[in-house]
Length: 212
Image (cartoon, rainbow, N blue to C red; front, side):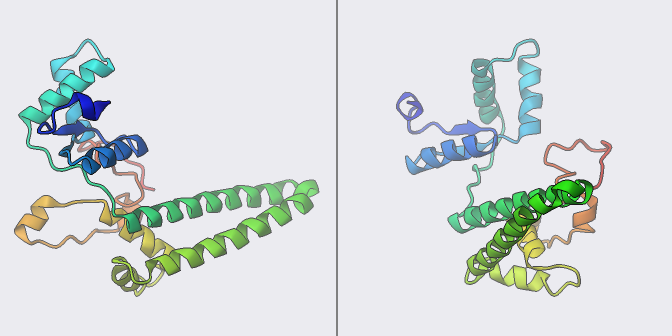
């Protein structure tokens, strides 16, 4: 319906809202439409400035359109299929690890239920090992194979951590650095929050942060 209602020459301006906005962007690009990314923090500040007292989907849509006309926006980034698959495999592994940690705590605390929990823990551990093999097989021959191998040369970084770092950095863009030909070297990225989510694109300068 959106494709029918919007002229082909007009770009779409989307805020990144996860799976929903990504699917919309895929549909629009498949129809050869231009899709632009509205950075969430900046877009919200713009919307508050023009509609300080009201907030509806219609007002937000009009505000994002005005924002797109006022600001030069970058194209909406879409992951390559191989990166999408890697992200999903890593997300599934994270879920298994969280479940294992919770069941492990319960097994230690609930002595009478330990016998019931042990088979479940063993099954999840087997699934996680199988998932690790799938992640390793997926990385072979992909664009991430080289960076993952290089990261594993750092003491303490295994294949899953290396794959996670590469996945996160693939989604980040540094236009000024790329324009000037400057390399990016993160300082203590895991502990200080750059890759753990403690620091986000919406983080205000000077705001208090809790390292992940």
